[in-house]
Image (tube, rainbow over the protein chains, first blue to last red):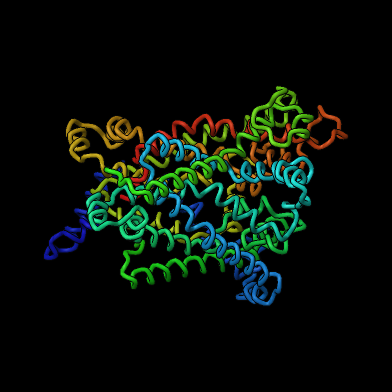
Length: 319
Length: 291
């Protein structure tokens, strides 16, 4: 593309076209190479985007109906969405989990990498990293299963210990009050270590002279951390924050779905799990597609907004 | 770096090491507990509560697992999907990444945008399901592989890696009469082994951990991968009942059996983890993400 633009403008169009066609022909094998990938993105990413029109139809999965043949109903499903009390509850749950993520999870990797940066013993550092990165590679099923085995009322280690020390047993897995703490602790357990990777890379590229200068001025370890390390990784923090905000409603279907049960549904049902239940389980395709569309649009708007805000604050943003 | 030996700084260091040690232990002890518990008799589990090293070794849980064909079948499905899926994904990803890494490709900027857009906006579950269904993939193992064949993120990492290979090498290969495919397979890929290894392991872990796609697209429980079965056994305390060899009145699986199933379904990850870890240590990966 860029090369086409760079060509001298005085040349007549046909010659330019011929040159382009010639280059494309010369690179035909390259286009053949990328075509399976392009096909993949078209079929599994772009087709579904266009498939979102069913959010404005009464989609029926029968021959003769389908995406193009179903009845057009305009904003009917969106109207239902905003008048249904259920939906407001679900949206509230989704936003609550997002807020928990932002407040209790987001700062932890930053804190951990600051602490890790103060470690001079490289064996300790490496061992620590090996251990805390591990949970990231476990599926949510494994994370939730391990928690389940440990938290269950009959024979779970945590409840046994509570009982041993004379407390009452707690029904962590069914109680609506415990859903959110269990959720966020699992997120921290699985992702906090892994989250440090990018901050550690940013810290590694800080000029050591800055620390030296700070020490000359009499700054202790904490002051160096505050006045050198933190400001140096500020832009990385901002970028990750933008990405996180773009993911507002992307809390991970798997994780929440695995924790969801009939007892905690009031607090645990989020948009993603609802789309699955209403759509695939109950066959309300159009309605759940409308919810999905609502979610995707909000996510996109938020990421663009956050990016804009970051740029206004003098940061680079993500694009 | 010269350490300042003030009292404050020493206290700081001591507390820092202590806290980090505690964090590492808290992260890892649940896994140790599960592994130890799976080798323990139920009596010991009940009596001692927190087992880190079993005193009475017992392999009952594993004997039970391997005697049921449900789990073995699910493991076979997961192994198959992981091996085939990783190969397929790597092929598609490297082909596309190489094409897009070539600066002389017309439409490169558009194609990159074409990929990045899918990271910002997507159709969501229902329309994707309809596409998978219309392709006739429901209830096929292909439904676990095809919809997840390329990760845009992995593709971009690999593309950046390819871009950092000196152009001169490819140039001379082409002058020597090497075709584009030849250049990719004989020059570029052999030079990119560390990146290829990392991305393969990422794909492999993702395929091994497949859960969502399986519950979306597979209704036939005979085709379930291990993750779905694990969830049935541990959380729903069922999953063996489809097994004809077992009496339908068997009690739900006990703690040790649940732990053993968790261990078995985690094992492949624990095996590849050291290799993965080696690459993070080099920081190669992070460098390419930033680039």
